[in-house]
Image 1: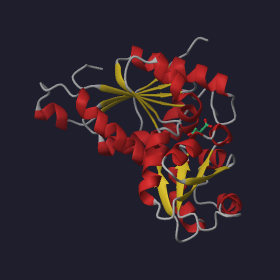
Image 2: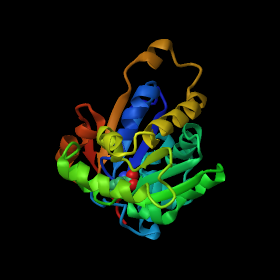
Image 3: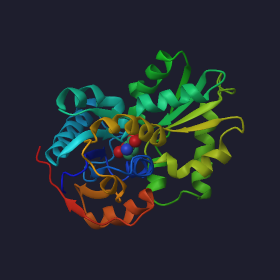
Image 4: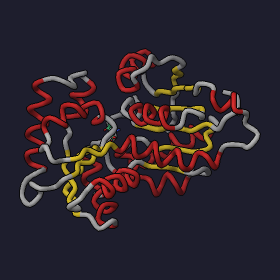
Length: 274
Ligand code: DGL
């Protein structure tokens, strides 16, 4: 990649972070992107803090070695469990998904009661609850571990997924949270389920997509990275994308385009030595 425009490094445990990249491409088209999917070691959502932090720091170093001038931790689990460790190890600005998601929930809610859905590890870390409570909101967190494999199976409009979502959301919007008016999608895979979740969630609920809110946060930071010397043509030319995966590049291409909504080319295999 030529260094004409700043490279944003986007990190996720696998394919899901491509929903964040999709939002970034819409809001920050004048960047180059290096996306790292740790497909050989996913899922992160069922792993411990120690393991996720170690993997995430390795990935961040890799993206910096590719010239990234900013890191976006697209993975909710990695952000929730390891953002402080990633920031301490990085030499460039780091944006995670939890604070932008909490900020967007804070703007959306009227009664200050919010439900967050995510992986087991994200929910156990209470990172979203802490971020929401800091903003004066009450939060109920609900782990929905079956949704990631259902999305990866491509069952985004399947009756089984709908049934599973009804059970999870029924439990989330219970016991004092019937009237929560906002739900945060605290996992990279859930934006693909937005139409289904819209049908299943109570009608009065606003859905906050942390991928979109993160892209807005990155957009604000990114302007500071742009060299004044960049010509209008350079800024307007299509963003360039490079992908790295730790497992099969063919599988990354195939599954990834569902998340990104675009054909994926230019995938390189990397082997991060532990
Ligand atoms: N990327 C993860 C997240 O957003 C979901 C997939 C996984 O568990 O690795 O939490």
